Length: 310
Image 1 (cartoon, rainbow, N blue to C red):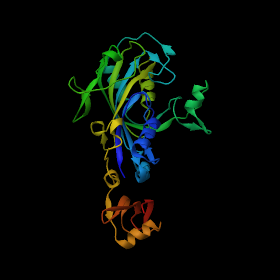
Image 2: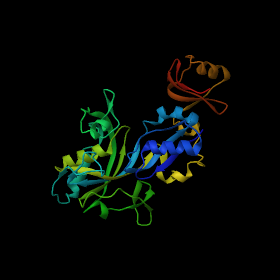
Image 3: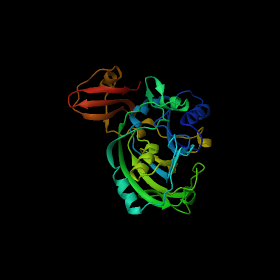
Image 4: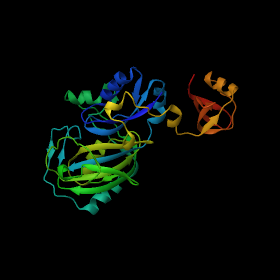
């Protein structure tokens, strides 16, 4: 069953996309490998039918983004949903200073998630509490920011590039490229255009807040496009109208682990949940005559089943 990269449009939640995929594919079994906010667009990876078993192996894929960070205005949601609750006059910052600040966010770190997020504390969703006027104490979580590159500094988000093409270094401004539509701007605020590569669980809205704080001003995420999830690039994603007929990738093409070819006995034991003797070390995909049997972890002596396929 396929794994499909879809280009999520502006204004839809990830759950909206899943629901449309269920209708288009005629199945209830559709999952995704990482939420995109309604005001973000770009790659959302869907797993259909038996491919939903793969979600746990894909949730930790790194992701690439184009982010528009507007300085001088803060919002409760940390993005362009608004309203503006904090504002200050700010001149376009020095480009060298911005690059120094961005470099300071590279690597493993702790990040405080947005109040408007799906994180649960004591059985309560943070966004539900926030919408009711409350606030949860959200603990900082470990994340990793692998790359942050300043692509430009502009007087407002409306002056920043809207068209991009994919190159060797990632998606780059290009007048002849593909057009992206950010949400309506909250005002004319100096805006950074940043290309980011981050690990699982990183909130670009929190990054926008924190970059602003490092520059001494409130800030919000004025626009966001996810251009890559793992091996799935936006250039290869289907639009919503293409969901019904999308071929996607088969399960074996998705699992990015070394492969062990099993015999009938080994395949049977793994499917029975046993721990057969085997010298493999680390995580592997086990196949039998080209069909997926299991994902296993090996300690050099035995295999432990992480997930098996009948």
